[in-house]
Length: 113
Length: 115
Image (cartoon, rainbow over all chains, first blue to last red; front, side, top):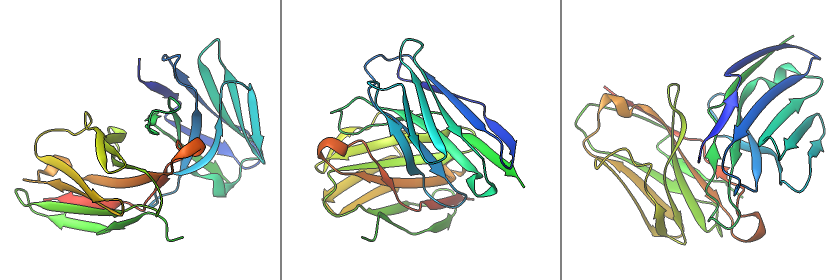
């Protein structure tokens, strides 16, 4: 119930293509859904986040799509670049719960030039 | 802003030795989190503090692990005795209070190898 399931585990995309990573959750009390990006040798960093009152949020080439009824959300990276190669984590939390995040297992993205 | 500071960045030790990892959160942040990252288990939350008080330590693997936060600017994660299966990257993260309390800022991590 507290889990966030992420897929795929790894993804290879050609430069200029669209990268799509999916996450699903069970706990309907979750109300904050961030995505974190992690480069090798670094800590994860917040990339983009969404709350369930909207179905989509876009920041540059990165878009979160949110389907509340299906309890799923996804990250789309448009015009993927080699510099986007990293590990991506989805997460979920309950507002006011001292900020505890439940992370997905991560997706390693490789963008080929 | 210096960000979250962790030390040491790398630690190699022998099985049975005590290991102490240190973290300095971002000034003014109210929550502090310790994570462990491995290929097999991904990113695991070990324990987190709010206003220096441990809130949830259900992720601490066993009694060999302990964490303290004596003040708002310092936390330690101790493993005693260490075992080879503790080899991992340990991250500390901090989070501000208020409306954006969910945003966590991660440190660079401590890469631990137990031989």
